[in-house]
Image 1: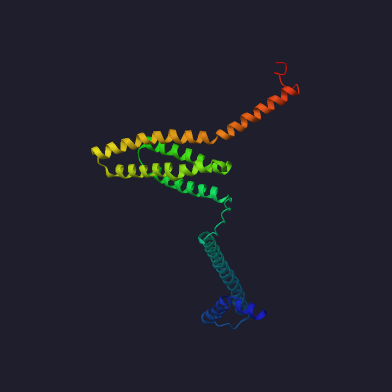
Image 2: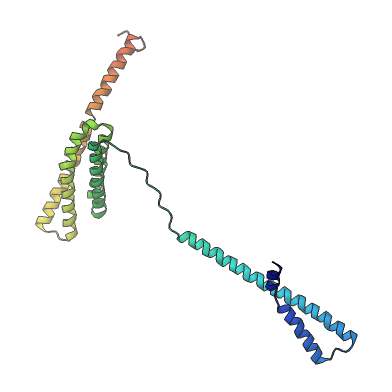
Length: 237
């Protein structure tokens, strides 16, 4: 350990002292005690000054090296790819319901693509309305699996046909030509979208028919019990 410390000590101050003695000897030979002590004092002052200077330079180099190492470590941390967070597992549904959910997600993605591609704002609003209604229809399969047959028909024909026509509308609009065939077809598709939206909303309402009946039954039973127990304002009627 001591040998390592000796090796790490700067030698520049010693060389500076040697230079002082050589210069002083060359200028005026050191024969007297006074000259000897003067040279020794000058050597001590030069030694201390050089050592302070060398120490400061060493500290400055160490500081710069530490800053460079810190900057490099920070860069490595920032550029290092972050581990991907595991996606939460999707809920598992019965096979018939899962098939509805999967098909609904595919249709949703295609409708979102068409929404972004079609520039006409009026058509975009209709596409957004179709997305909202179809998502609710698909979600009903999860809450009420008994509606799966009706929703399956919706996903097998009505929604795919609507998407097919929207794709045709998008392609025709991208032609930039207002010919009779293109313009007429696009107008018919626009009219069809209104009919589809109305039909989809009616289907969604029909899907809640059984739930509405169950709710009406619960309300009737509750009112009957309240009247029987004398807890209803209508008890005396």
